[in-house]
Amino acid sequence: MSTPTGATPTSRQRSQWPASQHPPSADASAGEAEPSAAVFLVLRRMRVPLITLVLVFAVSVLGLSLVPGQDADGQPVRMTLFDAFYFMSYTATTIGFGELPHAFTAAQRLWVVVCIYLTVVAWAYAIGALLTLLQDRAFRQALAVQHFERKVRRISEPFLVVAGYGQTGALLVRSFDALGRQLVVLDTSAEKIDGLDLMSYRGDVPGLVADVRSSHSLRRAGLASPHCEGVLALTDDDEANLAVVMTVALLRPEVPVVARTVSPSIAHRMRAFGSPTVINPFDRFGEHLLLSMRAPSSYRLTTWLEAGPGADLPPEGHPPSTGRWIVCGYGRFGRAVTADLRRAGLEVTVVEREPGLAQAAREDGVAVVEGDGTEAGALERAEPHDAVGLVAGTDNDTTNLSLADAARDLNPDLFVIGRRNLPANALLYAAMGLDAVLVPTELVAHEAYAHLSTPLLWRFLQEMPDQGDDWAERLLTVLTERCGEHLADLWKVRLTTAEAPALRRWLGVGAVTVGDLLRSPDDRERSLDAVVLLLLRQDRSVLTPDADTVLEPDDQLLLAGRPTSRRAMDSTLLVEPVSDYVVTGERQPVGALWRALSSRSSARAAAGR
Image (cartoon, rainbow, N blue to C red):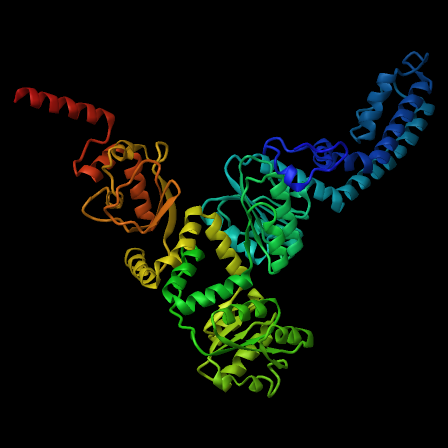
């Protein structure tokens, strides 16, 4: 399809350009040709002081060469320009070697006195301008940008770009850093970026104060780098997150994007650009709530695996699956939870103080009680004694805690869910002892972690609910028996020549099973403390494959287990004598020399027989 001259190509037409040959843009070319901002600021701010200093030196040198002097014989003599420049250089810099090449006359000394004071004033002016420049915010930002770009260019391993270092971003940076992943951070808050240096991360995490809406900021963060393997748009501004999704889709469409939003319309606009992973914490909480009602074991397994290594096994929860619920607050969160509960066939009563939101609930066909909920009698009108659950879902933590306390006074058997907005109130929610707490930032962090930490984990979580709750309960039992109630390592194994060279010849003849892979290299009769969660063969996946499942070359496995078991499995994958023992039960010498001597001894023994 051709585009008429002067016409702007549509988004569909732009997407047909090859990834490595995007149509050039004026902004991109301008950004590449743009000179160093720090050098530009130095030249602009120090121009007048440096010109003043040069003029003072030039006039001083010229005057000193014109003022007549006297040699040792009393004959008149004039200094050369070089001698005058040399004298003024060590005099103006306060070194002061002395008069040359002859003692000065009174006229020369008078001129030198004038020059000394002129140079002192010029140096003071120049140094003052330099100190002012060093304190200038724009200059310091320019230096920070240069330093940041140098650090990003030096990254030679896969890295993630985190746009937004709020609560969600900080949780994800900490989790990915624990996995040894390299990260680059952008945020509009200088205080948050400065806090990166105070955190005890394993690796160096470059951070820059920048507007994530700008394509230049994302390019500085390494979006164009071949090592960029993903972008996370995690700001609290839905429009900013949308801008990040658009930028990545247009400049690097092959790079995966994970974006958060609480607006369904913004989510729809995000999905119009490529295939980003859009996480709406309010929608996801409703889905989790329904999953916990219908399949509590599946819910526990999902939340445990999403929390990442080291997470404690979530306690068992039993939210009522029948009866009427009360939802306090009909904002974005309340509306999403109400819709999910009604989709499950449950009756819902909304308590809302804003007339406009209350009217919106009525238009949606929901029973409404107008009032704050914390006022005397307002919550009673919702008849909590006849309800089975209550959701305190306003955007104010003190209001939510008050609602939960008042509801329990009216009906101690209520299943109470609270929405926590600020991390500082975590202790208050813990002391209240609610049955469930929604923390939107943590929910987004867990979902993003599951999607980007190991792509196989995300696939496992997507397909797991279809296996049934009894299956999830059995898997939880196996995981806790082998790994304990603290989530162990999650890792991926690819049975390729590069990553499993020792097993390659056994895989080719179909001699390796899942059970063989889980054998201990020290004692093959003992199993490793690990569980195979998923087997991916081409595009077909098998969850928790049986021990006698035969493995094939290029299979991919998702495993959970203790770190010691992971190291032991690495030996099986990389060391041939270890893999031979695990598969056949016969121990072979480890070193090449010992293997050669062993084969020679075997040959001699065979010849003797």
